[in-house]
Image (cartoon, rainbow, N blue to C red; front, side):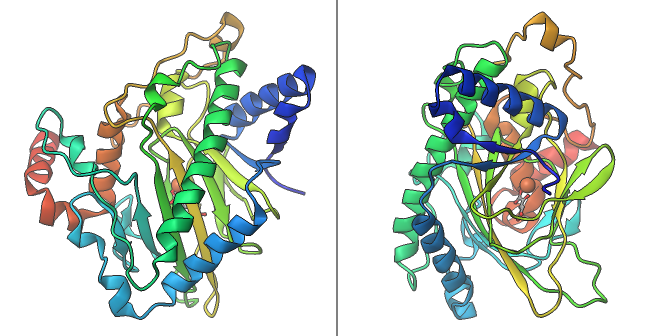
Length: 337
Ligand SMILES: O=C(O)CCC(=O)C(=O)O
Ligand SMILES: [Fe+2]
């Protein structure tokens, strides 16, 4: 039995009663757990296995090919992060990954710091197919994410298109991640406990590879992959948009045992960098249940997506920050002092 609710996106196409029941379950699952499994999403199994194969092929490349696109060469936090190159809650994560964002030219704008996140990706020249398949993955998953957003909006008493303006040019982020196995002596911390900083996450996990854990009522609950399902979770901006009615749940990944490893591919759907996500006016019966947005002084949620994203990127990649953004690091240190 799954520890999280399993929802079928194709219920939206089976008439109004079935669509309405999908929306209610979506609202309840993401209010109570903040996490669910999604089946019926229509992402072709063949596309899933092509992306999986290329992810495996990338991590199997010689070290030099991976380091040729190392993220320390990108002011935009793109490219390859080696194992141990990333931090969550100040502690080193034990995973290697490629970060891929929207393919847009860098801009020189000084009206907001977050424009520095915009710029080209770094693609491995040893694996040219990766870019082509990731583009298809990006487009398909964006469609699924947009359908979910419309369903959430309606389920919360708002027009289905309430988020559309903010998402006209979404800022997606795709991570292709590999968690190496660790020896028993290293207490397994693949990625530390965190909330996702954007709106919603669609997570593909290599079949049979557990390790993801979700914090529910103060307990860490295992969320192993279910055949053909994506794991869906709410990010901080959707919590913000619903006054805390929907919940950005903390989660983490425990390292695989020594001798094995685990691939995952999280897809983060976010509004444009300069978009403020609309705050929904909930119907009174729902508003009564909204908990308010979490107010953690160590982790302020910014309503403009670019600010929230820049916060989490500078925190996760201090080496990139030090090389390319020393002025921002200094300004933030001064503000915190
Ligand atoms: O790899 C996973 O299963 C989850 C990764 C994750 O939570 C993240 O990258 O934000
Ligand atoms: Fe996450």
